[in-house]
Length: 318
Length: 318
Image 1: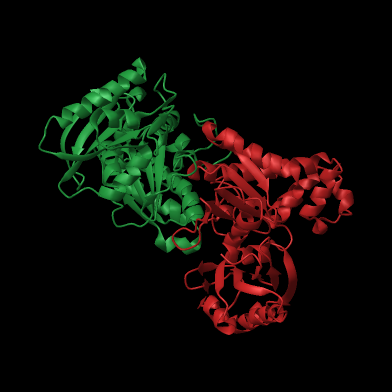
Image 2: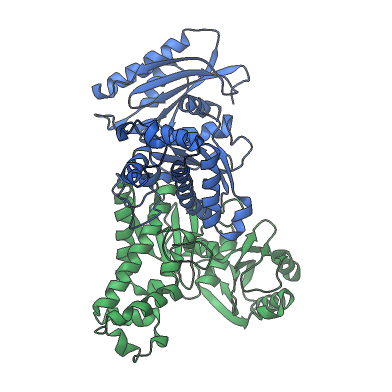
């Protein structure tokens, strides 16, 4: 564990841009920068960009940096710090990202899957600081997650544990991009969700959503549905309730199998607020074993903006 | 770890009878007995029966007994050896079963949930001896399970982990006795399975099942469906294929979330043999994330008869 006055650099490696932050032990970002990933130019260029951003932050000598944490997509081997086949990163096979960055700066580097890093972030800085075990679910373009058990990340056989998005809620249901059928991601992932609304909204000509999108379905976003719900639009409210229940049904499966009753919900869609959280909790309670019902608790994630950078920095303090 | 020439007594506490076995370190039962549970007479009588059976086995002084393992239904606290509200045991609140038995014989006692004990049994004596991690599923009247991760039982927050039977495969599907909807138990549990067949078999007057049950639907059992399938009855074969696929779909959820690709299948229905196992594997592979497909392996459980007693004794050798 680093000393109280020490800092960590968090690196959030995304498909479009890389975010960097100098983070203190309370999870506050005291300095930050951002660079384009240039993923299309291959791993050498990406690693160059990563080093460039870190170098920039290290120029301010007032912070004593005890480590660098990198949250990356794909399959990660934390022991060796390798990143394997991150989706949307052409030309990557298996890259020893950790050792390359460590060599460049002579500072310890920890690499972890971005969804796992988000869960560790909530454990160290966020809604999970007082929880022994919890299930983290992130609702965004995709639906991801991470499992914390006894204050430790549960990684599974090869670091891939926590793939909550690909829990089936209906084996005859909606097709998912992963190749399976009825995954919760195929209902709650942003694009799937919006497309389902687009296909149904004609049955609701009275909805305020129509005014908010100026009758242009292409401009429909989760944010607009949220706005309509805030204006008491019945259809929008129903959409959020249903979304919450379905997410709850998927989570009930893991709560049953793992006997972990605490759930932290993060990601963009969690902007739907109280209505969403209440219905996620309702969905879990409706479907979980009776003995678990009184223990169920759903918490909103605390790390919102820069959750990626903070989660990555938490790898150092973990 | 007991010495090689030491034995464990395994106690399998069931709703109707209690099975006892003197088990060596290779999982061989060298002596056994059985007593009625008398559950309806309350916990005092049940504990008397447990002690009676153990006493009987201990009369043969040639075996050096290093411990007693008890597999029991309900919620178990392994630390204190308490058994809480086992279903079908009237009058039990929370009973310190472990300490009561330990006191009576002055031999260390370990108590564990019966499904968890079965998983430990497979790890110590069965198909899991060479696996680091696996998911155990038991297909019987109920559908149960246990999770072994890194050679350790994963118990969850309160020892209830492994409730695979209550994974939903269709949130709008068949009602389950647990109160939820679409649980795999509501498809694969013996009675549910047989009832579904009873409701559909009229559409299959050509099936050999009719001859085997002498046109009496009340005598339909999984064993008869197995027999019909062995006689190449197309409908019976289809039933087993579908059962396997559905079980596979439910398991795909846990494989995805836990990143544990090894599955051991036990319980009565596993008598359906190769056809069932192949289709469980097929179902998992159809629905699991692509990166996991090549790793998936489904093993039949090795402990068949007396799996309960052997699993309970394994608690001592674990």
